[in-house]
Amino acid sequence: MSLFESYRTDPFFDEMFFENGEPRPHYRKLFQHLKDMTPEEFKRRVALADKTLINQGITFAVYGDGAGTEKPFPFDLIPRIIPADEWDLIERGLKQRLQTLNLFLYDIYHEQKVLKDGVVPRELVINASNYRAEFQNADPPGNIYVHICGTDLIRDADGTYRVLEDNLRTPSGVSYVLENRTILTRVMPFMFRDLPVRPVDNYTTQLLSNLRELAPASRQENPNVVLLTPGVYNSAYFEHAFLAQQLGIELVEGRDLEVRDNIVFMRTTKGLERVDVIYRRIDDDFLDPLVFRKDSKLGVPGLVHAYRHGNVALANSIGTGVADDKVIYAFVPKLIRYYLGEDAILPNVETYLASEPDSLLYILENLDKLVVKAANESGGYGMLMGPQATKEERDEFALKIKENPRNYIAQPLIALSRAPAFLGECCEGRHVDLRPYLLTGKRGMTLIPGALTRVALKKGSYVVNSSQGGGSKDTWVLAKEGMSQSQGNGSQTQTMGSMTQTLSSSKSQMGSPLSSNPAQTSKGNE
Image (tube, rainbow, N blue to C red; front, top):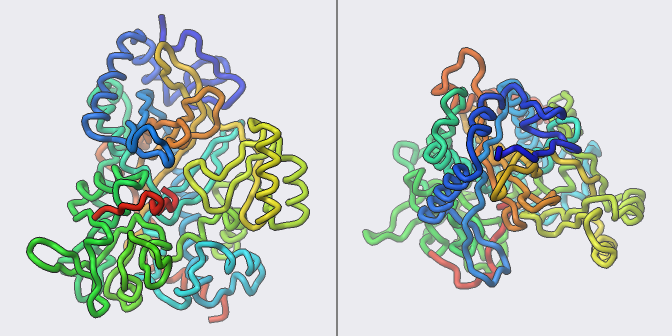
């Protein structure tokens, strides 16, 4: 029996196959390897991968799951392949988008010209739950707000890549990109033999270099970088520990740090050590109980003052969450035109804002056809899949929308592309999305030539989040013709000088340790 004996491509765009069942050109060599394998042989390799996942503690946590804190992260062994020309489009589109969002963040925390010009309604920004008025006129190092970005992309029925959402606060999942590649090279090494798959292992080297560059000027020679985690109750704790180990930096909790004279120190067995850069995986609200949530047990009292005095750098910067608000998402194509004078390379999904009266009426009358999302939830929470919901669920959600229209958007249900997934005996098509990771540093932007492909393993499901039954795939980006596999760990474009020039031009245009409280998990956009 073949792995693909009963495989169906219709009625969705299939990543591996044309409608007639023939493999797409960039999948042909992989398909040859797979079709020669029996389900029994494939299952043995799946078992080996599962054992590796468990032994290495590659897990995630589901909030509210009484069965246990940690679960192995489901990993499908059939990789997703992206040819060089498609990746070039994705790279250009993501860099354009992140450059725009950094300009937008600088603008709204300074002159607010974009609000004065009416490109985005003022009330949508100042009433956003992640807008931080306390940081008005504050300058982050290098004027960069977003150092690590994970943007979610989908492909529609025509195969067009579209941006589903931006993750600018504490984007998660890159550890699975790195670990998926390691596991697949161990259990299926022959699959890499005939394809120029670009490596992803330079991610942590580039990230560490960017983080070190953020250190205060007087501390550039040997800066001390740490990763701040909420602790084991966070759904992405495995990733926090993994990245700290890969980066060669200390993994700390709020109780490990203290602030003296607006300088951050880490408690060690040898005494206090100064901290210069914090890669934080804690949302703004929990960072400093003296400024934000007073009941936070996760943060560091005085951290914000140290940050404002320029004695410590944070990645990502405070206040970035306003730009990944799902309501602001709807305006990003306009923002690209406003700041860069260009059309968006990667289009949005059509979006209706419940805060607009006509759109609110349309949403309420068409809940059975729409996907409704809360503006700042993540992980598949706070969402209504209208076509798959019951009437009672739709009625309940309608009340929430009416009570707080600003907090909701709606989109048509997009027929997400599908890719083959092995489901015990054979392969079936399952819906997928794509989360590439883009790093911004003083020397420019770097896109890791790989991504987290999330797959909805439940039959018929469109929800790819691990907390909702989803898994992941290794994502292969193929090298351009003439490029060796060792080349192109992620190309840098848009130097810091040119970004500053763009900022100046735009400004000119603008008028010149472990928490014991499981409730405090600081989800962010993990």
